[in-house]
Image 1 (cartoon, rainbow, N blue to C red):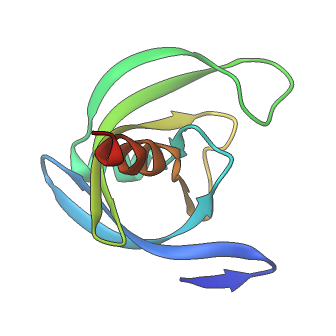
Image 2: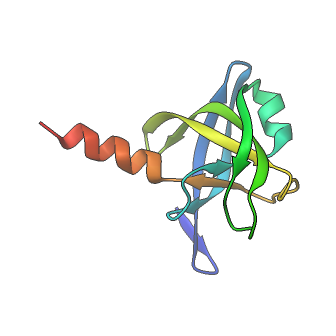
Amino acid sequence: MRFENNTPIGLIKIKGPLGEKEIEATIDTGAFKSLVSLDLCKELGLHLKEIREVRGVSEKPVRAKIFWAEITFHSKKINTEVVFSSISPEIDRLLVSICPLIKMQESSKKP
């Protein structure tokens, strides 16, 4: 992992039915969902789970496409939702939420 302007950047793998891709991503410790480009969703054949309104950095809810993907970060794999929204159709880097990984790690510690 490295930092760019105090922003953590890490190498992640994202996997779908049509393959997997290893890419650099912004690691967002405050995000509850990961943001991906629609091109990447199509390239990996990610399954569309639903279309719904979500809240994020914008003032108002926006319609977003929710897909399923397997994300690997530091040898931790998790099946999680990833989001494409028209509010950021040309994102320059995948934004990965580590909240699902933290929850998975915490639940594995419970007796």
